[in-house]
Amino acid sequence: MSLMMDISAVVSLVNIGVLAILLATYGRIYKNTKATFTLGLMFFSAMLALHNVIAVYGYFAMAPLYADALLPYFVGVHIAELAGIGALLKVTMRPF
Image (cartoon, rainbow, N blue to C red; front, side, top):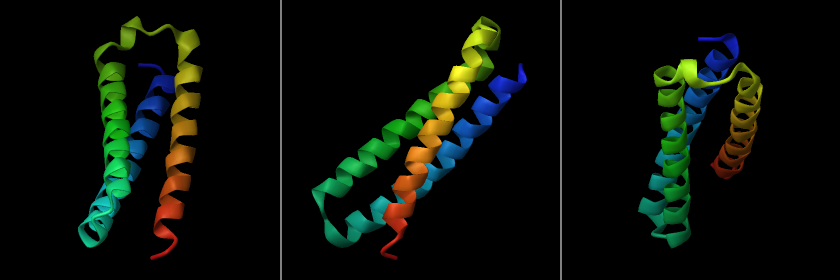
């Protein structure tokens, strides 16, 4: 497996961790408020986590099938996603 694919997998695993924190936080908020908007955030976080789990699995299971020219784009997508969910985590945790 190439270095770029390793980086993509690591960033995806970090994304899963951040999304797990968000999901647990939203679960706690929902428990206290019963706000339906929070259910939507929980669903959103769960689907993004699922996306990252599938991506990591795909990197390891189908590594030979990926063209090397695509790998920098995968890294960019996962880093952009990490930046977005990192900002969401910061905004979510700010009131606490």
